[in-house]
Image 1 (cartoon, helix red, strand yellow):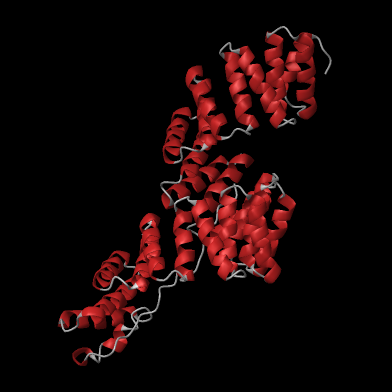
Image 2: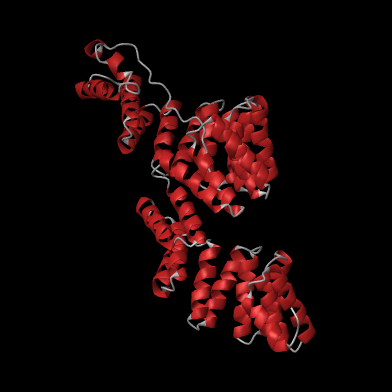
Length: 448
């Protein structure tokens, strides 16, 4: 899957004010006002003002606000929040303090609290475009894409050519599966600025999602040409190359993504998948291990390592990794499918079918999951259910040789000899190396 890019909207902290000078602190105020640009000196000056105890009212609020900006610049988000909270307690009309506190909450991974602060800023100043765009970011981070789009629509009515807002809305549309709307927004950006590397990259990801892989590759190539240091473009191009079974090219792109961003767990996971598909299991395992060290809560990394253990027939360790992957990412259909395969190997058909049920529920267009459940059904003596699943797998992927072999096997059990022969022949036409279908035809005395 092409990686979902983070929503990027301007989140610069609003500038620090400098009040009318109060004589006892006259020398400190200019330094305090520059806390965002020179945080160490600014924090010291603001702290001196606050420690003097001479300021009251608005000036006291401004001192807290300015020091909060210094802490924000130093990425000391908890201390920044404490100062912004003090600022709004004294001056509830300080929209900038609410806005900047929202930025700190975003940085701490609390988008719900950030949205509340951006809303407070908008109540004070309904025309604050930055607060509107930033609230959209907070909604997006919570998965509330409809609410994000409402805010972005409102912002774009005021600035219809704002590239950042258009890209942000395109990302929200993409997350909703509205790929054509996403492509349209990215296209509007590129119509005004054909050299916007990020818009090319994001449009490429949307094109990939619609199956237009050649067009996607064109956009990724353009993004890389315009910005050779855009790691996500290499990552996305690698994923698209892997979808076309161009594994060496994919690995080269993942190499570049990792070179540019060594902490990119997603690139390590995808490179591990590519190595696993090439049969380079040791290299795949090393990448998944590295990804887990970088992102210990990445379900995909555990699922990938589970695939390596499965390929090595190390079923207990594979089960442990699939269990962990599912606990971290309950919507990860492939982890259920592969865990189901292990339960089937171990003879626990009930648990295998339960896992395939989940896989099909989560990925209703996955032909492989239907075929896996079809085979398990026939092993469990549920041939009618198996036949229905095999039919579904073939409808979803008419080039799936294994699904034709599965259906042929079930048809043979049901006494449908002619249909079985036809399906075994189709399986071999699609995959001449499918030994099971060839052996079935030999036993039936039918020519291939």
